[in-house]
Amino acid sequence: MDTPNPQVAAVIEAISKKAKYRAILPDLIASLAAEELSKGRKFKDAIKEVSSRLHQVGAAYFTAMADYAAWHTELANLPTDMHSPQVKAFCLKHMQTHSSIQERLPFIEEFFHTTLASIAPVESVLDLACGLNPLALPWMPLAGNVQYYGCDIFSDMTSFLNSFTGYLGVTGNFSTCDLTRLQFPRCTQIAYLLKTLPCLEQLEKGISERLLDTVPADYLLISYPIRSLGGRSKGMGKTYENQFEKLMEGRNWQVMRFEFKTELAFLVKK
Ligand SMILES: C[S@@+](CC[C@H](N)C(=O)[O-])C[C@H]1O[C@@H](n2cnc3c(N)ncnc32)[C@H](O)[C@@H]1O
Image (cartoon, rainbow, N blue to C red; front, top):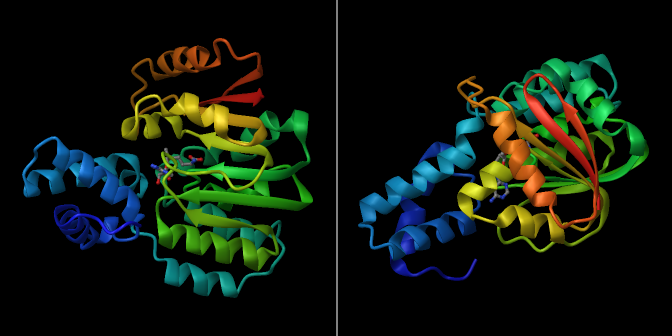
């Protein structure tokens, strides 16, 4: 991170004192702070606005504070076969901590096996804004030597995911990133953008188009929530489907559509 100006640095310091924002990438806090201060907001108001935006795009999804130290201890006592009942029980338990992932649990196996059937076994994945989705690895139709990469804004989460995949012997890496600024280092068979585009649009309007064009993957698995975090549907499915169709306009890409109880998904061949 470049050295921020003193006002931005003070906002980062104040926000990083709050436990739920402590592990968020400082670069993201800095860019939001600079944006809010440039609107002429006072210091306290800037802190309030930045906190609220960080809550909306990331912290709101945690149903409880994730105790990664305890998760590490549990992990160390598990078998290393990801399909063992103990590992699957561990994954299911901890995926409950992230509401976006929790919503998918009732149909997790169907979700990945249906959407990825035409390209399975999948050889490499880039899971963008992954949340705790990599804990769903045992339910994905992956090749034995799959390479699995991912990123999100929480450093404690990406660090845990590195330990998790390392423990299971899966080749891959998770980094702490801000997708509004990320340069993509590698090419994968598929990139997941699961329930992520609406979230990123809150940070930068129009980012979806740029991401779709620049993500270096042959296929994209894009999904949208059909219900809000509070459980109301409010025509979300139709709204997001219209947004997706607009994104596809003028792009000669092949699309397969899948609808699940709480999620609408599209497999796109670029
Ligand atoms: C709705 S959740 C989706 C989680 C996951 N992809 C899934 O399968 O449900 C949105 C995720 O985006 C992450 N996120 C928000 N802003 C981001 C950014 N600028 N760069 C990377 N990740 C971001 C959040 O931390 C959160 O995990």
